[in-house]
Length: 290
Image (cartoon, rainbow, N blue to C red; front, side, top):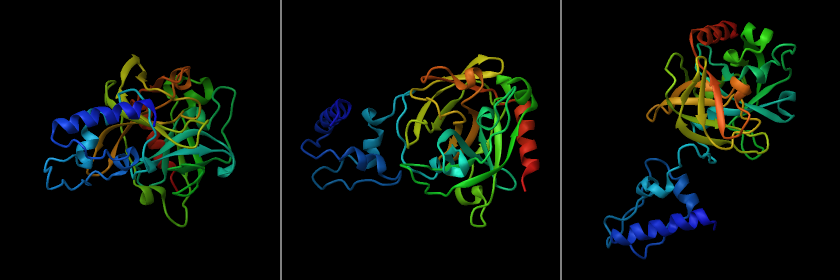
């Protein structure tokens, strides 16, 4: 038991005692975090105001602090985020992408530098997208990237304002990726200040990390957010805003990239601002879908 969990248990014990629940066993951390949003423990007859799973999740000690990353559970929404691999999925994962909605249900958004080396470079080859990648497994399949779309201002001058890219993935077992996993909306011109959730895959590990915080304007074409642990491999991680708990979807309003190709330190990340030019790039990607 680590120190942080011990503190959580101690605080909850005090809260439980104050509410007439002293002596009840505090559930294990794993059981609390894996409970579904609608799940609740049945209060005992002696303690009708017992700590349900939902009430436990709402207790302050279990809230993730803004700007601090954690390992998220495998959910429907998280499954739309995945790792980008080299060598058709048999190589290493080096970037992150996520499924965004499109008419033909086959587009993944990431950073441009994950797809093209910028000025003096060229396009990557033999890439694959593995949504929901975890512990070395591909629970939602390995999807071959067939087309890559980045702006000419990235390919010609590595302009950080255009460090956004789109990839078209092939069908898998006759199905399109958004039909299988669903998709988040592509959001643009939403302003610089948004509460976002960022999920990505550090190249040094085999699990995703997530963090929530509020973005700020860094400069005219760049946004900034403070979130810990976003090291190499998290480029392209989606900045998800306006999440709807009913549909389990939101808007991708940024990706880790842009200034310093996303940030020189692990705890501060950047994204190009999604303006009309980035919307035009998205439209170009849509026009290339097969």
